[in-house]
Image (cartoon, rainbow, N blue to C red; front, side, top):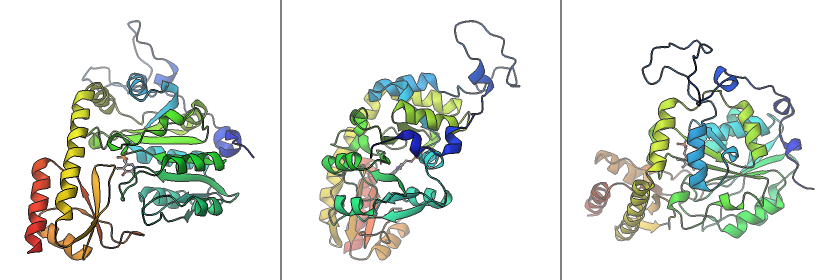
Length: 348
Ligand SMILES: *Cc1c(COP(=O)(O)O)cnc(C)c1O
């Protein structure tokens, strides 16, 4: 059996005639044009016109930064919209299944539930690495998509590259790799492997390293054929004009982003060393992202104490393999100092 995209896409999506917006049917920048086609208010206030439905300028900038072609990109209102589009294009409700590896990002399961897709869970091992043998055993004829998150949230580590490639080679469905934290990672993005694996879909976001969680911009990178399918079902104007403008200026200012990434990684290392010295901290897990998973003596108690001290962290202790674990995002130097001082005060 080999990979056949036409067999994976839901048949009504393959046959779908997408909505054609006014701006899809006519858009040019070369000439002075009188636009009377979209029932917009003509008085210029900067946002009175509909945004570019194909986000061409923004895609050019992202394509250059990521080293892919613009037609290998689909943009969404956050990665969550991108992930939902993948479900809706490929996963047949009440029939297809997906595989996820807990502990991991909770949205894969929620989106599976929303879309009536059942979910097989193959837990990560004690080092939070993939258990390839178990995943391969779990794959059935109903398995449409495997979701991986690397670096993984909430554990913070990256999966071994060889394991990811083994899955890509062995599975003839789609493999989605969520690279939300890739800019903090010592591992290379799978973007460079797209030409070798037609079943690979990568998602990224401007919400983390780029500091733009508020504008909601998620990125899907895949083959042109997969992107064409997702493009058919995306809402016509899903990326608003303000988001497109702000994303372009941030992507052009790589020095600022890179400086912040370097600083956050340095802060993470400092935080790691300080956390290991806190009396009730049992283990700090190695991280390739901008957060640390920390096992404490009693997660519920320490979580409540931190809230009392006006510090909000994430209690992950109910997740598989994360007993008594809290997740700390790396903050500014001042915020990290407050965290450490507070933890040390609670120790005594
Ligand atoms: C934060 C995060 C995202 C980002 O989601 P957006 O909708 O783009 O803000 C995606 N995946 C994982 C694993 C995350 O932790």
